[in-house]
Image (cartoon, rainbow, N blue to C red; front, side):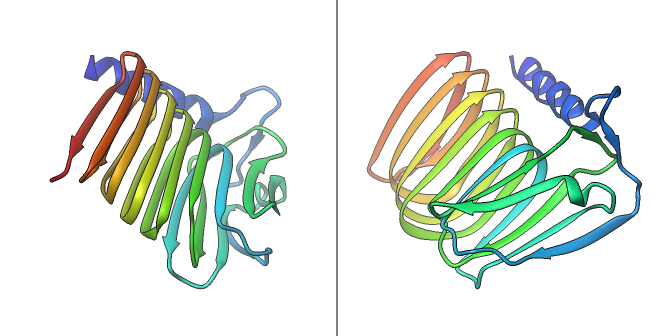
Length: 199
């Protein structure tokens, strides 16, 4: 079963990374970094295949690294306190587009697609992780309550995110690792798996 889950994840990542051979924009191979000046946000949502690194408890900044001809295809905006990142058009490149985000406080992250996400330094009352697709997500820090929603074949590693209460819902072939010191609620639809630790 573990081999099957990993195979699903790899195939989805390759599909999204390569993009559509017919009509997709081919990356130039020349990497360029661009900084974005955006309104304040406390949540983020990405659609597509990205390599995302989020640092919490720091002054806000958003930096993007991608092939130079792909940068104009990237859409970033903030609405109702949520940072939205997506692509105007399909593409294929040897490297994923990289997002480096710093934010004073992050309370929710939503991933629609694939790629990798690392969230460091969470420190708040509630934190939410939503994954729709085949992303690999890691999070660490402290929160009183964490909510995890994983639809598809995503892998969510939150065992270093110390929480008192955890609510986990898996549908599909996803996996989640979670820490809960007082209360853990789990719902699984499909062949997902939850690994937990706590006092």
